[in-house]
Image (cartoon, rainbow, N blue to C red; front, side, top):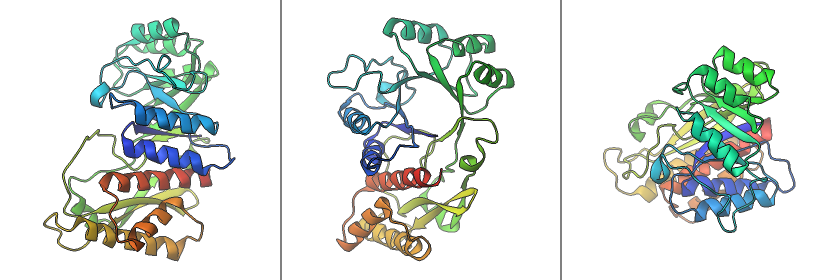
Length: 309
């Protein structure tokens, strides 16, 4: 199972909605972990309802670290029209807050809880292991599993998921002009051999949370593809005109999109909803916005993982 870690920004939530709608009766192999970063929950609610309607599992972080919801304890169980907690999993980031997590689990009677234990977790290891043994905890996601923690998870019949940060963000998009493609992940092929129950990453978005931004001098579209049977690569399709200013963003998007379409048309015959979106924008000579470009990249990656695992 694949556990993409996504922030609750509109483009990420739209990608999840489109992915859920694309399943068409398939069982999802994607279990998104969503960190809410907006006070307004409408977009998250719409995504949750869409995923729930097709039986797609997902988790929501209730103590987010980033954005407008940082350092708050959220309660979606009482949100009007939000899916019932038996449909989605409560997720907690462990960060010197174990008593509060235990209190929330007990007070809300949560089940199927997912813990994220980062390498920066400051709680004592014995306390973390004690929390893992809580009957309400079902899964543990970690980016640096210490041996005792991994043993505690597997020994208590919990699921353990390995978390990687695969996208190497550059300081400026023009830096991708020097990099045609690079290795993105091998976890999908080897996580079971390494005794994990699933794998997680931040998709094609950096783990370094960035909200907002400026118009880039170069438009870059980042798309993953299966280069070898055990390797996913990421290609960086970049505009090439006027790389020292941010003029004509629509034209630059067209340059990058045409390159992406040509690559996938030449090398991959299966249909991709995301690539079809690019085709439509190019055919209409329209620019969807920078957020929608990220949505397309994320959707394409989710569809790829759904197909190959």
